[in-house]
Length: 307
Image (cartoon, rainbow, N blue to C red; front, side, top):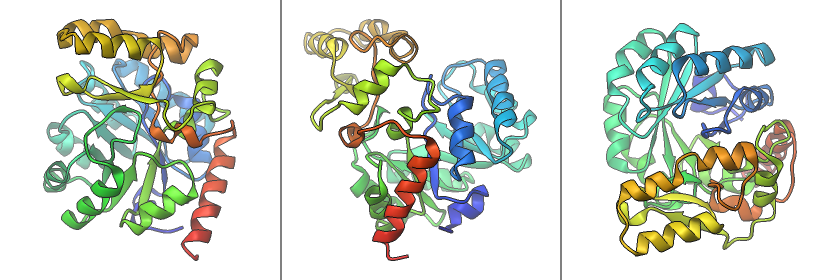
């Protein structure tokens, strides 16, 4: 399926893998790219040299394009911004901030810059700063979220900018992809479904928690402090919400969650760890290879779109 996004990224399928912290490492990124999508390495809070190592390992596994997600709030963001240039990365997505200060350097290096946005205002601003496309991410997604749903955000962003729009949040099968295209998107970004991919290094406890999740198993913490995060309900989310209702400060609550995502992803602690996942978790039933996932989703989407 050819769109402005597949042309821009040099990929076969209009699917980007989300740059999820502790999850989006070289095995998963390379597998998604090999399957025809665009795999991303999640910079998260990692130092520049750690991201460089991940990029090099991914390039040993695939010669297809891979991208890097730069988390702009990271204390290492500046180093990571330089590393992507030095390592010849051609696509960067950005989150948690404004990439304006790195735009000139990235554009000079021929990098395609795709910020993740949760509002029309930010999408328009990113287009003015020279973004090549935007990911319009609805609150159905896992991790840090905005307030708008995907179905309302995507068409409004499509109407507001002339650059291509990639839809994210609540998309995990061909029906979601077809719906995103009907809303005007030209590609989708998928996170939660790829967490359970065979190539994903996530602990099996985490994968099974997603596979067994029901439609109502998603919870949002941090709303009262303006930092909402979507994950699956467990002891940690219940305790967090209780303390939030008691009026604990943002700093106290933030301290409580330090290291809990790593604990869930790497150690499999799905009771006290943070199991980030989108609302789509209730529709994910099995572990598959990235290629099986992408082929299945695209076949369904193309059938629904009458292609």
